[in-house]
Image (cartoon, rainbow, N blue to C red; front, side, top):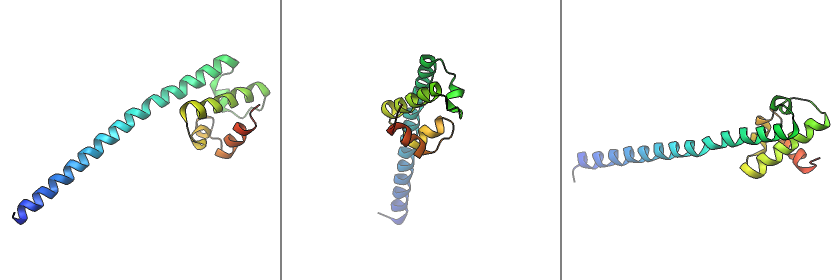
Length: 108
């Protein structure tokens, strides 16, 4: 095998590896997409059940009705979608992960 053949083979292997990585990345993005829909579905269901707008759940209100709806959304996002505390906090108005942890711990 000549040096040229060796280099050519190595380049082909690298291109193939890059191609496989691109396929994997596309697959992961496709798998992540339904989560966005599932998040919206959970928020809409909780919003309808408690008759509280989603924006109110994302807001700073500490009214008991709003807190209960927000906590239910937190619990469902954690249990059903296995989201991180940070992700749940971002979805629900930019709350800190420790706030989500505490809310799940002492859920009203």
